[in-house]
Image 1 (cartoon, rainbow, N blue to C red):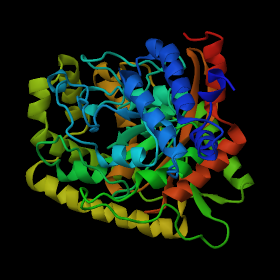
Image 2: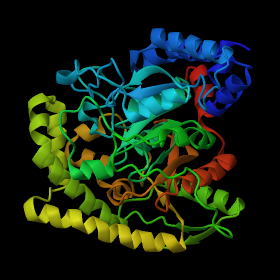
Image 3: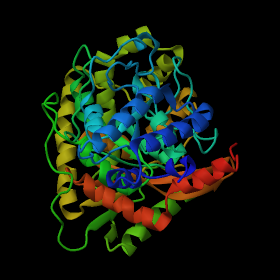
Image 4: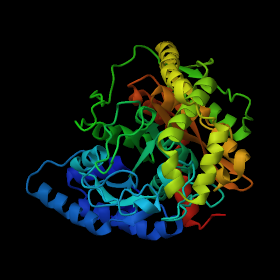
Length: 481
């Protein structure tokens, strides 16, 4: 076995081999670091290299195992952590130059949970300023590139995470999602993810000086990007382990009760007036056929109004941002991000004062309508974006650019507003004039049933295959545009 083999292993393969004693944690981490040194210079996905402490930790894990300590479920699995979440002794800069020296005093719950299970952090990944773009670039660390080529944005705000895991830098990549920041990078890079529902993963940054706004608390979640669906089933039970620092975490098991009979899936191609690209439609059809082949009942039926819920939710979020965050963006943000926020406020006119309170209350109405619908259809297959993923810096091109990047993404942020889980999985590789790029679809699930969404992702992946295998062939051939 060589390092050329090990970095390609999934998290499940690594954990099975290290737990069985067929692979040392040190060899696993050494292989991943070697891959990072090869692939990252062209991507700038990992912006803080933690190789030295990762190897030290891997050796300590191997010694503990040799001394009789039972290995954890993620023993020796290399992971990356996004730079907006606390990891003891490292800066939680959030891509903002003014925060470059904000050193975390201790680990956030998810970092502690991953390390308690035996995972090893090999690096910290890039994010846009304030983690509030669907693209990844900032004055502190610069631009992250998509491993498929520079014709596609890597997505955001977990763009570094998505680019890293798909390029083979770590088997798991941490990210978070307030309006799509796990699913945008998954769609851009061809990764698999599940946006957990509200209360599923404990969240807290020990370095924070104040609590976040109530909508930010209720829409933002922590999660993982992976190269295959099985790795989510392996790793998410670790991520959701309780932590008392999050008083609203719900300590439920990963797997819910079995659903009797074939699971019914609602299927929609409705893009609410936005043009549905033929490649996106083909991806949806492939996903539908894969679910049918796997024994699901798929019915083309409209779910409750996503467009209204999404626009209402994002305008409410912009109202909270205007009230609580705008002054920080104005004071510490670059001119680029200030200009983007100005267009955000045009695209999503903020609800303020009494109207903001009313729209925050209306969140329950939308969530109730979906809860009732999901009683009949436990899963909903939808587009993620109506068009193939956009080019880098598209959101800097004024109202038209922001409209293409976020305006049409109602299937993304509507789900955050209602606190529902949603999987995102590639179901097609489009051969477009500007170059090849993956196309992902979204699978919304009942509240607390992330496992059902991941099962459906696995069924689609079984038919389509892992997108990373095609990407690695392309990278080895030196193909990028």
